[in-house]
Length: 206
Image (cartoon, rainbow, N blue to C red; front, side):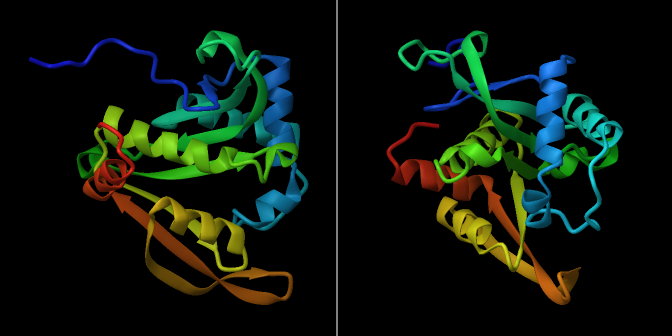
């Protein structure tokens, strides 16, 4: 007999994950994330351009409607209360598991994308949100493989992904032209059984 019981999956140790809402506040937050040119230069290989409200609205709609999982990362209003999406407070960032076309769904893989607001970087929230997205992808969505990528000059992201247990699969050499020189695009991945082994070593039940 299964010991599984109903529960709220939309939280981790310190964070709450909620839907992207059609509010002025969420619209402004998404625009602030997308307008952070320094952060975007370290994660996107598109040509940097000033972010318009129209473009960030399109991204907001994509997160809300097109992703397998798209969530605003939040801190709770009161850390003494049990974490639920009802008491979500300050917005920390955005995390997504990208969706594949229907005729790719049987491959059971996805990409993680993560954006953390500038004032919340360096506090461990990005790593926690990625760990939660891995849990959600493998344990709730039934994925087999999850991948994430980094640009070779973004050494902080590369170090974090290795620390979380991702395996480097390969590089697209001199893939990106940025600030007068070429940089590699590095692909990392984690398989379901690898993730379960990490949980086992950490003493967590899955």
